[in-house]
Image (tube, rainbow, N blue to C red; front, side, top):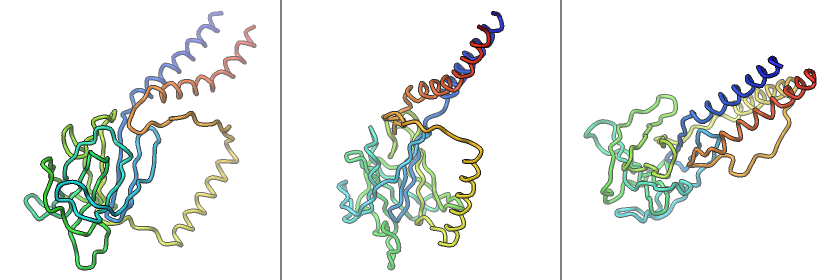
Length: 245
């Protein structure tokens, strides 16, 4: 009897630990956009979606026509304003990232060039919004990206999000691999998948509705993870109880 109670206590502690670890996970939003209309939104609970980008008129003061505009998927409480990107403090403006809270969009402006290589290369708004933030172009050498995490009240801050919002501004378009590299990569993935399939068989279950809310760290995820762990432990517990009977 004592042994049975000990096993029950161990199971309960495992479930409690799993729930605690899940709830302790920091919720974050990660946006990534470039000058050619490529963008994504992901969060720490598995949501990952491509953002729609179109050329449309910027309705904000000083906005230009046919500006590269991203739909940010209705962020609750998006703070309007301009993020002004420079290569150095006091240097010339290189890019302007405009957030329009009225329609939940991001407008990417870049320095106009004669060739106009990128969709964002149309120049800058004729006037900046009252709320601005300065960003120095500290580019990642691999992705050519500049990163920005707004504080409350700054352009791009999402008041209704359950955690911080991080932006990656890719100041050139994403480089696509050569077709041969893609083929080799696909073959490698196929081989790994085949190997894993031989070793592990996973029973598929339908995902619950709203499993990965975009802007909220809901308790549903914690409960789902704990319930999943409990389901995994249940057969072992039933077996042990039958042996003790």
